[in-house]
Image (cartoon, rainbow, N blue to C red; front, side, top):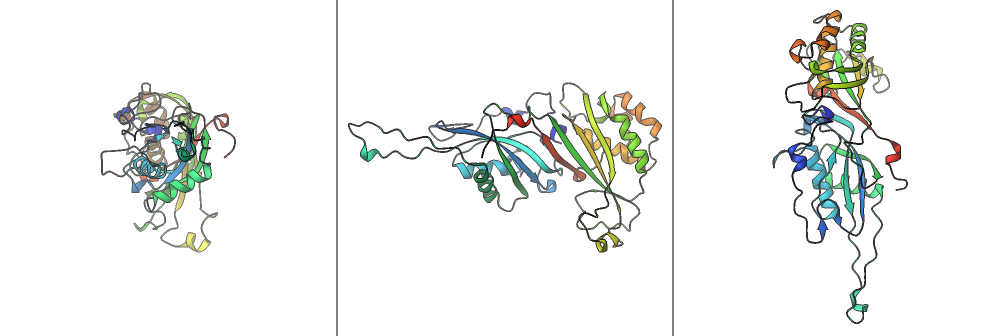
Length: 335
């Protein structure tokens, strides 16, 4: 997902990113619209993963986050355009703060030709770019009921790229664990991995520590990964207990159906291999419930073969793209 997508960071662009943009109206560039005023914007957006067939645009009729955003942006500015994403998450994966960039132009105001003399054309003055507030408000208004929202808009330079200038990415993975009668609260269903076993958090943390650092992560990528190198630097992999007390009343936490132990796995790196985070979480869960011994984790990593993992990949619906980090110097001042 995201950098976990088949076209991982460091690989060539996917075929859909190489496709030409739809032919725009006369006098409008494909990427930038009218040539008078162009401004590039970074769009921070959140979405509910199970409502979409991934982030990246698919064949006609398949709803993806990119297709919904492009439709809304195109309706706003009056011509077809494309948005370029930083992280192309898979079907079912959520995002708290994914990013993409888009170029928007304001059409010049019509000149008052009635006052022109000797057939001289009055040049229409350039218009200031849209404010970030106006862009966010206009796009969200046109998204409608689809489960994606633009939460922040930032002006960036004309050479900025949401994917290639990302300095780091953070993913959350939610697990609800412990014996249960088979029921998952409606407020957790589809949002976290329901593990009906007790998990040893101490063992999971020790296993996570063995994966941190620069390694060949071939044991944690699937065959569809297109990254040119399996070597990645995992900056952080943490396992925390989240009892939800900041969010839920004690009556809710005490309910026999929802009284579960909630774990949050946080992974941070510049980029990840395809399915790397979900495979690592699958390993941590297996160690936590005794299916894989802690002593075997290093051997699995050193095997550099996903077949050595011998455990199921964590499901997509527990994974959240939490943050994409950039150098603040890439952002332009002002609204």
